[in-house]
Image (cartoon, rainbow, N blue to C red; front, side, top):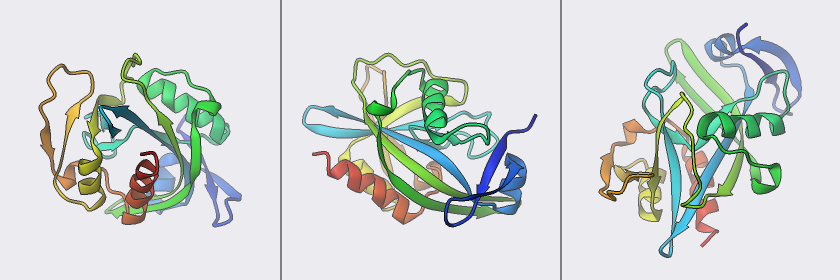
Length: 197
């Protein structure tokens, strides 16, 4: 059975249930969960990005939110956020470990695909020694320091390094290698991290 999504109006009221493909074909507004993990190390704060699997239908191989996903029509937002974290990076967290920080609208359009989301954004602090088990939808995790977060915010060439590698050599990341997000969305994320200093 195809993934079913609750279609919502501007007041976050459910007005229909549609399959994911139809929602993206028609640009129907739906809610998603986004979880950003950050880590403190050597006096700096780093933000974790996942590289999406090259087998994904949408945005394959691009860098994006640490953990994100759709809320199935049969589940609550709370259930969805905990499920996505476990599916994508293998961590079992509780809601108390997450800081729900609000909703940000997101809109992206290309031929045959319109992603019209209301993103419920969460943050959580990650410990360097936490063991992760990446799911099949995730190629790898990378980290960006505060300077590189600013480059991401401003849609400029950034750089990062892969989490878990002994080598800390950075590699360049072109703006086109990140999933598209509006400036307001990137501001929301970077401003939150700046407030954690």
